Image 1 (cartoon, rainbow over the protein chains, first blue to last red):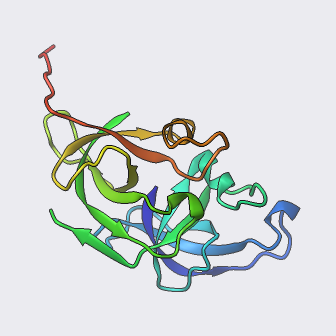
Image 2 (image 1 turned 180 degrees about the vertical axis):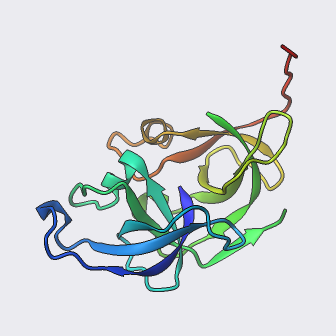
Image 3 (image 1 turned 90 degrees about the vertical axis):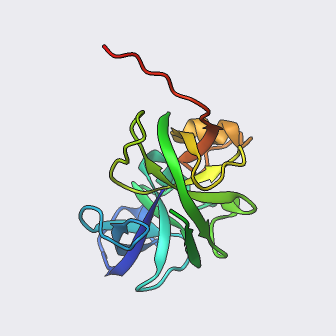
Length: 89
Length: 92
């Protein structure tokens, strides 16, 4: 899992039926100092995050298990909203 | 598994159910000599690791589900499975 900052929303009318009802966000992977790591990606949202939120997300096969009721064809899923980071070092 | 150093923790109220009541830590990947590598990982802790500890992180979903006691697959990938006491490396 990694940290990310939600940059915006992505709309797609034509998509795989398994993605119906799944919110897609444009998200910038970041480090603990909010510095960007790599390029922004499209991530499926399962925790009702919003524009500007700091989130943590899971990549790879585990991203398909983010929704309890169904599997989603996603390789990046937002799984939690960050309230606060306690960085000591 | 990879080596990492715990640099802090994540406080989160709204998250997926399988993350509830679990300690979520920030881990910086390191080389065996302690040199920091790029990136920041978010990992679930099961061994009571603390800030500053060098840890072993299992970075695979199947392993994570196994360790956390799930029979089904879960959206957790990184789990801290050990605190490193010492690393001895031979020069090749």
